[in-house]
Amino acid sequence: MEAGLPKPVRDNLNPLERYGLRLVLVALTIVLVAVPFAFLLFQVLSHGPLTHADISIANRLNNAVYRHHGWVVALKVISNLGKPITLGVLVVLAAAYVLWRGRRRLAAFLVVAAVGGGLVDTAVKAAVNRPRPHVDHLLVHALGKSFPSGHAMSSTVTYGALLVVFLPVVPRAARRLVVGAVVLLLFAIGVSRLALGVHYVSDVVAGWVLGSAWLAGSIAAFEAWRADRGRKPSEPLAEGVEPEAAKDLKAG
Image (cartoon, rainbow, N blue to C red; front, top):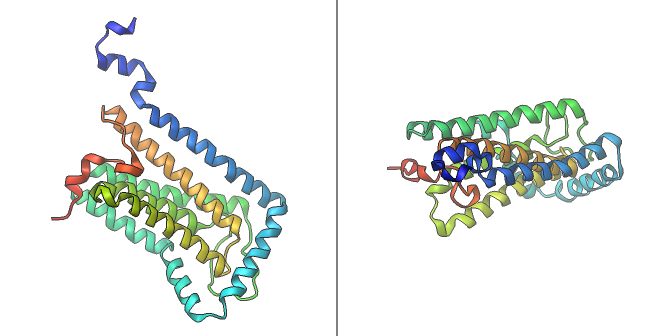
């Protein structure tokens, strides 16, 4: 019956055509990501076997680095790359730049993803109310509760959002390398929080998982906006969320 209708009408009548198969896959990804987070949350709330391993690993890492001044300095520098103030400055500068280049939707995407992720992290911390680890050598002071790691979650959301916004200006041959570098940075930030004695392994892993879920949801919302306006679906980790913005985002 729909075969004789104009294509724009058929697209509006068919939600799968309208929003694209990629959105369905992103939603599935969010659900799959929620499963390991739910497992970690259950372990923490029930003081399951994983929490005993948490304590052991936290102390071993802390004891391994505290005597090495150079390591401690390096870990603090890496950890600072995931601080809220650092991430906030990066988001403000990036949002201001893309706004100046005429890409208001990308600016909104950056701000909403980063601020929303921070609010989710704060809410989960308050709900779980897990104390920080008690290690032999506390190398930095951290405020707030432990689960999930705010550094791990917020850096995942922020650096991930910056990646998919600015990926279109990265030469195609270097895009995989840039994606890998961002993943390595997120891993280093998480490990730095463990070694400095302010988080458990489950805190950091939960931060990565929850941050990935929030980032995927933010990208899905942006994809829905694109589909609603008849734009082609994007490949966020291959070409960014707005491939057409490449010319506008290039400096000069």
